[in-house]
Image (cartoon, rainbow, N blue to C red):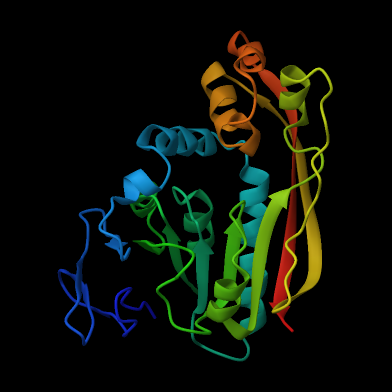
Length: 271
């Protein structure tokens, strides 16, 4: 299922890691993941900083985004149930840009699922591997080291949309689920940051190789309980880097914050 990132030959597992027929070897880290980047540059320097990875893990572990996690798990259960009558093989799932594995491990824990997850950041994958319930590897979504048409279900939450690669790895009858922020996602945060808060533009990915077949909204109202949680969720947003320092200071004195969370799950299939 996994391919060598150098020559694209199949990788075969052994006690130490994995190797291909071309003689390229990839050792397995102590936590159990494989490093499948072609570049010798550290995955940590190419992905999220270690502190940010751990902050995100701690935030998600508090359950603030549990409604989205539960919705994704339910989609997995539905697909496994739909396959049960026609095949005894496990359903293969790939979580693209899996981060620290919060969603991946939950989906992979569903009986009848063979889950894989990867991310560019080594620290993210190291944390994900500690959660278990999936095979994890460090890789680049621009050249995913997996065979064509391998996965029955592909998931991608808040990551860039690589149409060519996503369509390539998706099985002929498979489904790709992508998640984007809904209009009111973290609106309470924006009400503090900006004099004129704005709704998100609910832009779904446009693609010619895949067809949009349905959407689902997941919404809730949450109360962030600590300053650390407020800062963590702010750092997870794209507008963290374009917000003025003076506006960021508005959050500094808050101990709690009530806000909406709002997500759109979109399903795509091959045309």
